[in-house]
Image 1 (cartoon, rainbow, N blue to C red):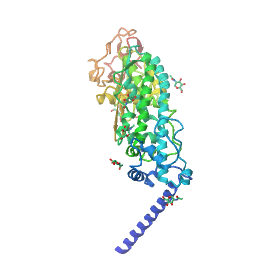
Image 2: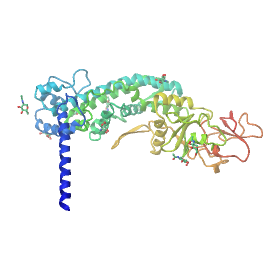
Image 3: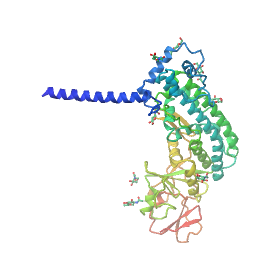
Image 4: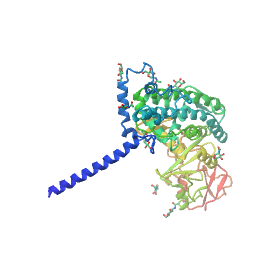
Length: 472
Ligand SMILES: *[C@@H]1O[C@H](CO)[C@@H](O)[C@H](O)[C@H]1NC(C)=O
Ligand SMILES: *[C@@H]1O[C@H](CO)[C@@H](O)[C@H](O)[C@H]1NC(C)=O
Ligand SMILES: *[C@@H]1O[C@H](CO)[C@@H](O)[C@H](O)[C@H]1NC(C)=O
Ligand SMILES: *[C@@H]1O[C@H](CO)[C@@H](O)[C@H](O)[C@H]1NC(C)=O
Ligand SMILES: *[C@@H]1O[C@H](CO)[C@@H](O)[C@H](O)[C@H]1NC(C)=O
Ligand SMILES: *[C@@H]1O[C@H](CO)[C@@H](O)[C@H](O)[C@H]1NC(C)=O
Ligand SMILES: *[C@@H]1O[C@H](CO)[C@@H](O)[C@H](O)[C@H]1NC(C)=O
Ligand SMILES: *[C@@H]1O[C@H](CO)[C@@H](O)[C@H](O)[C@H]1NC(C)=O
């Protein structure tokens, strides 16, 4: 009984070993020909044991390089492939290595991969440097448009350091093709904190402030400063084998062509726009409101909101999960909106549609603020951890939670965690009939009066003492 079984297992093992060998053989063969049908490939980094090769190279060649010579420069010099500069932000001094040329000179495929990664890191950083330069004018445009839309008081201050933080976080928003490279960079700095402090130079511009009406000049200060840090980050990666391996060791820089992020300034500004919108809203007395365990569209559509047609909602959400002045976050079952604590009649719908058309996402603006408050944060900050970079408090608006408990009606609890705004729930706004019951609420109200069916009397909602909405 046992023998046939063992024989069977043995055959099975033999077969799978053959399969694995055949697979490895094919893969190794294509990895060995990076100029062939399958050009450079991230998985070949491991298949060819390039990391181990480089560590051995580094021991063997320890004495070869002059003291102070960056690793990348020394490595390329040992290949005798001409004068190259792949350490600085330069143009045309670091062409992609050619496999044909390497073969002609009998240089190994591992050395080709190392040379190529030196080139792709250089290329990626040159693109990043350009993107930050372009971000200066793109940010001047978007911040100008945000300020024009929201019109905060002229003297509203922003810290340049917060702008720098928000700008640096832009790296995590780059699009799909460059994403794996940015991801590898962000992951790699956990082993290379020396690079991280230049990529995310937080807290280094802390005392300088600017006002929104003269932000354009200050943006130049921030982008030039950050460009210098990016220049140093590149030099630090190319400086020694250990740092270099921390960044390229996943293989993700082994792609051809190297995707460029030079033209992704707009995308990279998502974080900065979020911060600016949050600051301007705050300066104009806006707060975020939220209704826990509430799907505002369902509340309206299914008629549980007895007294009021929630403006612009009830017919479904758009692609941003917005209806009217509300954003519903399905994952946490919370409906968010904005409420102006200075003027209850203020309607945020148009501004919100502008924010989410071009500048930021509801998740960053609303959830971001809720998360910031939960962590007890205030200014934008970046932490580097196992899951990559975590930016918090880009949006740091105050968050107020509607009191949904109908038992509190009459005691005038507007929020569970914020003060009641003046004139909230006051009866008798303009146009309220002598014998009618009226309740004065903010435009984006989703509190306990919505599901309260009164004391048997018809009652009406008003915004900021004047608009009257009849109950259905
Ligand atoms: C290179 O040599 C120096 C000085 O002899 C030594 O301190 C260092 O550890 C060596 N580095 C490597 C990677 O072997
Ligand atoms: C190429 O390199 C291999 C391995 O280093 C060596 O065995 C061979 O002799 C070299 N061929 C030439 C033409 O230099
Ligand atoms: C490399 O890219 C892949 C996507 O192609 C990604 O899943 C992976 O996380 C990246 N590696 C690192 C270290 O970021
Ligand atoms: C970033 O660059 C600026 C300007 O050169 C420099 O003053 C600052 O120290 C750099 N930041 C870090 C973290 O080194
Ligand atoms: C490169 O390494 C040298 C020697 O360890 C060090 O003095 C220098 O600061 C490093 N350069 C960068 C840009 O990290
Ligand atoms: C959201 O909360 C409401 C009220 O508790 C509940 O009826 C509904 O099922 C919840 N929806 C989800 C998706 O969890
Ligand atoms: C309203 O309730 C019905 C029945 O429970 C449900 O099928 C429908 O999806 C709900 N409408 C909305 C907008 O959630
Ligand atoms: C937003 O983007 C659209 C389409 O790209 C453009 O037409 C519109 O002018 C932009 N709006 C603002 C306020 O920048």
